Image (cartoon, rainbow, N blue to C red; front, side, top):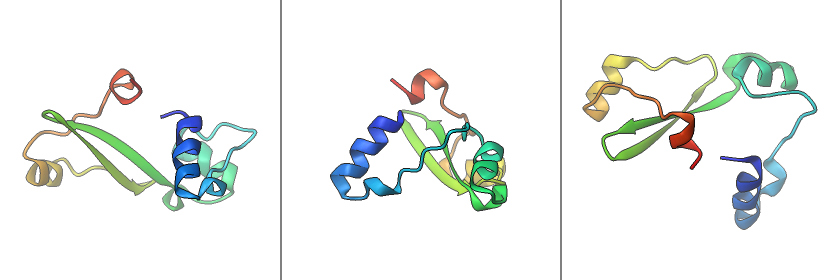
Length: 89
């Protein structure tokens, strides 16, 4: 999702001031942590998965990894992240 779409959504909810933009890239957990001068575990990341005909979003700490066994037990399928094309139509 583009930052403009996020900004528009946040504007509708009255929380537009929560969008932070940086002069440097924050595209990865490592870059975001550097931009914010914090540790990767303090960054929230969103992981997008395809589960059959559904999309599942998981928000996790920046240093967290998906446990494939727990994922399969919860969703009944192997973890498959969305491609860039699927995530940004």
